[in-house]
Image (cartoon, rainbow, N blue to C red; front, side, top):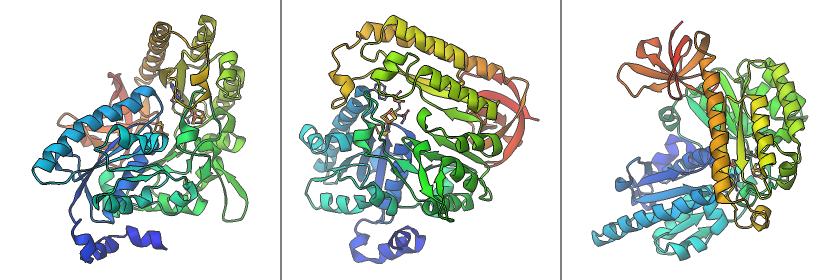
Length: 470
Ligand code: SAH
Ligand code: SF4
Ligand code: F3S
C-alpha cells in the first residue's frame, strides 16, 4: 500500500537520500492546536505526514521553519483567537525575512475550511490554508507554498482522508505517551441549529473496521495502554465486520477489547440519539470500557431542544441515562450545555438546572451561545441579551462545579485503578488517571508509566485526586 510506504522509518531514510528531500531535511514544524480532540489527533497526523518529508516537530515556535495553526470555528472567540495569533506570527515572519530566513505560515482545521481564501485576504502573511479533509496533501501543499504561490486546499474528500491517513512512526507513538486518540468517524449530519461542525467537517463518514483495528494494534504494540475513539458523532460510527455483518460502535468496542495490551477504551463525543442497545451492552460487559460517558444534552427545555434541532426531549435523555446506569451502575456522566440560545427564557433555563440536578454530573462543559455565520441560529430574531447569558452561565457553572466536587469527594477512602501516565510537576510525584478521567497524584515509587495500579484515594485537590498505593 502506498500509505504504508510513507510511514515506515525506512521510507523516511529513503526520502532523506532523495536530493529533492535533502533541502528540507531537519526543517522544523511547530503545530498549535485549538478546539476538540479530533484536532489533537489531526495535528499528530499532520506532523506524521510532514515527518515523511523530513520535517521534525518542535515545541519552540522560535525554532520553527513552518508554523501551523490547527484551528477551531465552534464559537466566535475560538475563531478570533486565530487572527490575534496570526498577528504575532506575522511580526516574527517579518523579522525572519530581514535576517534572510524563511518562515512559512499555514492555517488548518475548521477555520480554514469555513473561511478558505478569506484568511489570506485578512492575514496576507499566511502562505497556505488547508482544510481538515486534506492533511495527506500537506507536504505537497507546503512544497508549492515554499515555491512562492499561496495555496488553498479545502476540498471535501473524507473517505480519501481515511484512505491516506499518515501513520506515526513507532518512536513517535512511544514519545507521545501511553494514551492515544484514534479517529473512527468524522463529520456530522445532525445539523443542530447552533453548530458549524456539519459545515466544517462535512457529512458523517465512518472509517472501515480493518483500518481501525490495524491502527489500534499498532498503538498497543508500541506500548499504548488506553485508546480513546474519536468522532464528531462517534456512536454514529458503523461498519462491516470481517464476517460481512453490520457493526455499530458497541460491536467495534468488543473487538478492540480483544487486543492484547489495550487495557482501557473510551469514546467521545456521542449523541443521545445514537446510543443503541449494543453500545449499552458494551458498557455492561467490557471491563476495558471505562465507566465514563460524555453525552451532551445542551438544554433541559424541550422547547429549546426543538429549536436547536436536537431531535430528542429532556425526558428521552433522562430515560436513556437510566438505561445506561442500569447496565453500568458506576458510570459517571459528563455533558455539554449551551445557555442563552435564541428564545431561551428564565423558565427554559430553570429546566436545564433541573435536568442537571436530576442527572448529577461528574464533569461538564458549559458555554454561552455564540451565533455562528451560516447557521440557522444566527438568523433567529430572538437573540438573548449578553447580560442574561452571563448570569445564567455563572449559575450553571457554579452548580456543575459543585457536582464535580461532590463526585470527587465521594471517592475519598475508596480503592480505584489508576493508569500511570507521566511524571508529576513536583519532584518525587507521578501522575495517573482515574477511570473517570481525573488526574491521580501518586508517589513516584507507586509504579512506572504504563502501569495500572490499585490506589486508595486520600483527598481531593483542585481538579485532581491524591492517592496512595493500596
Ligand atoms: N459533536 C458533539 C460536540 C460538538 S461541539 C455533540 O454533538 O455534542 C462541542 C460543544 O460545543 C457542543 O456540545 C456545544 O455544547 C458547544 N457549541 C457548539 N456550537 C456552539 C455555539 N454556537 N455556541 C456555543 N456553544 C456551542
Ligand atoms: Fe454539532 Fe449537533 Fe453535530 Fe454535535 S450533533 S457536531 S452539536 S451539529
Ligand atoms: Fe472546533 Fe472543528 Fe472541533 S469547530 S470543536 S475543531 S470539529
